[in-house]
Image (tube, rainbow, N blue to C red; front, side, top):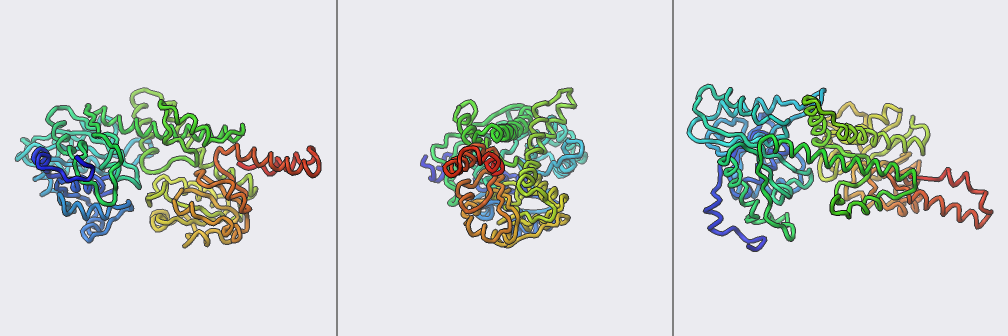
Length: 504
């Protein structure tokens, strides 16, 4: 079938639409619901937050995700998508009910399952014996939560002991900023269940995606050469573990790259060359090997803590997971150290942060490195400014205690600033005019926390450029200074100036 052809009648007959309820209209729930409706199912998204549901009913989206507004509009035309605060009616008529609520970390590192538990009881109280249903954990939940959800559904269904249901685990692998693509064109779909009938229902649910037999949305081209999507059928605990293991491994790759970057700075190696050289090895791969200020967001930190907590409960010491988290914590402090090396005293300095969101194409500030850096700078007496194309309103709303001056432009951010720090590698920042910025600043320091800038361009504008693990750049500058000075005055005159001017 051509990539953008409509599904034929055979597919329509073998892939009948299902009735779906999604409990939780947050990031995962909205994207999941919209994508399932787009491929032809009828979806009802439920959330206890009445203001959020009112927004959705009025056509507004309470989160920032590229093209989600357009996808929901298309979903209304195809399978149909509704929004409500009351799950009772939709659960009764549903074949599949997703739980997609938050599981924030507790102080112990364990996952807070209050919202999952409430959803399970709510589903049970709304069910009847008219059909067998599949209840799907889409939320990231600790290993063994499938059993917990099954028990709590039964607890909520005291009105009808004859209800029939099965619990499945279907972890999400969505990247904020590209969540729609990750949902419609995934690397794999993982389903954990204890019986073949449940696996069959979930396979039917995802058949258009597995076969790629749906029409790609006009704003999102199907990846060239995309093969049928693998379906991994496994047990409940194995599927739950897949999610944690995947995120732990990706976080470990980033922390590994940062550990290597810190050594590169000391020995004069260029981390981008090193990670390119190892990433071309098919056993390693080049993705998630970019050195910088580390990872943030709602998943990596929370999932590592939860997996570490689970390991401890079963008597396992997770040395690699602990080290992954420690390297990430240290990387944020590295930005402060680099500013101290160049500015010495930070008290009374004005530092501008280029970006606030934990990554581009989102306004998500959960565990964002910017927050750690801003708080530490303020503790040290610095004034902190920030500019982010999307996330400033969210930061004002969610972190009012942070005395950040929010700027309307990068130019305003640079006015009389002593240093700029690239925190989020928004595409807009690739178009900056460094000479223009330099003319506005009091100082001349740029800390490139994402290694996103061309160091030569930044330095030629008069900046003291500092990247992460960019040892080759430092050596090149030192050698150039020594060479130029040697031609003028001899080789021994420049040893101290060269050392002083060395940058990262």
